[in-house]
Image 1 (cartoon, rainbow over the protein chains, first blue to last red):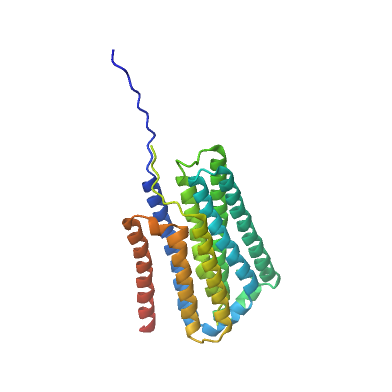
Image 2 (cartoon, each protein chain N blue to C red; image 1 turned 135 degrees about the vertical axis):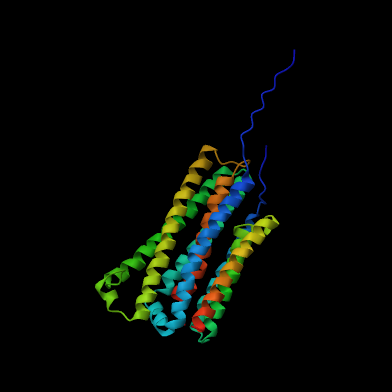
Length: 205
Length: 94
């Protein structure tokens, strides 16, 4: 009697998953790239208005947010290292820290935007209509670019929360961690975009 | 079947990269307060570029990825640079 072997293999291709994530990141880079292009053309046209506009922003808040995102980028990268080393507890803690830092970023953004709104500065406000063309362009780009970036922060938080549950349930583990890896890649993208947004929006000389 | 292709980046390497990034952030902010005129944008973008390189290489572990992916990422940035160049040529000579 021959022995029957049932060979069950779940199809998995981490390399392809990662490549897919990168292709998506490329589209995101070009999306923000287009906005940076619009920004640079108008900044070249209205340099002094862009400078005056940037003086309205708080460099301190911008710097705190930059540091929050940089640290969060490191903690999520560490979470991946932790899961690769099969340290589930540490990975959970590190993803949680990342989420807390993301919340700090959003609270800062809320305070920042809130102050602008109080001064009557928000997209479509009566005040905005009476601004010079250069100022109008600066603040429109500011709200659109930081707003779109903040939306990416929220999406990143949702992805990392899913990763948190997957790590906790053991779905993401030391042998299979592509979900966390891709989630982390998305988070680094958000950090990468901010690295360019911060000097271009806050530090105009 | 193990199917992981990712290099494990040590904690201390990640900490070191963070310190470099923090330092460069500090440099960008200080450079703005100096009045470098037209150079300040160049310096700011140069520093942001270096920071981006560190994030891509170490946090996004491109340094340890296969050549195909690294070339693809580089091409995206080349593509963007070409678009910027063409736009500004068009803008300057219209």
